[in-house]
Image (tube, rainbow, N blue to C red; front, top):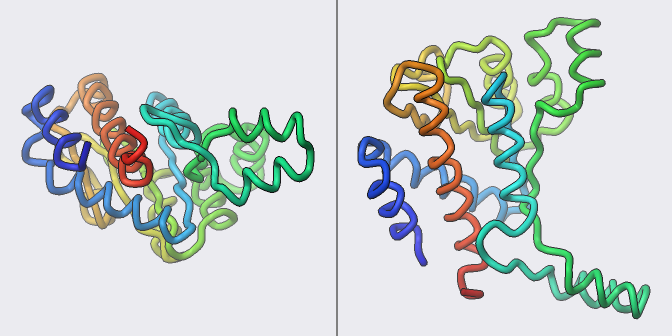
Length: 215
């Protein structure tokens, strides 16, 4: 399965996403480049978009659709350290694409909100986690969430590529993201319904790029 197959399947199910096919492909290319170069993905969003952030991490940090054997060097080290349990770990552990949801560390988030500014809950984490070559996926149905916009500004200042997932207007994120996937729809529910198949497709393309030969 190749990138075009994944994209065509997405468009076949959701023809309203056809105008975004090029941007979705660009987003996939950006993620593949990031992971090939040893970078990581940061993801943020509020409310339902917070849930989407964790969902993306779940698809990337373990097998999604394909088998993902761990690196052979790691496998050998596990076997060397502990023959019996090492064998089990070598068989059961899966390759993970490094991805962090900036939405789940409640102790850190509440500390930032309490001590500095609630709008900085994601930007502060970008300062700590982000490095040049990493990618930020910023999710906001309106495109106007202040905490997400501040994360974008900080990410760009630190040399991260920024992929935005928004509703059709793009909001303020329209002018601040290198890649904008502004799905058609204005209501929060409709936008979120379309975000899910988009990021599932991104995860499929990434996985296929590294492990497609395991089909």
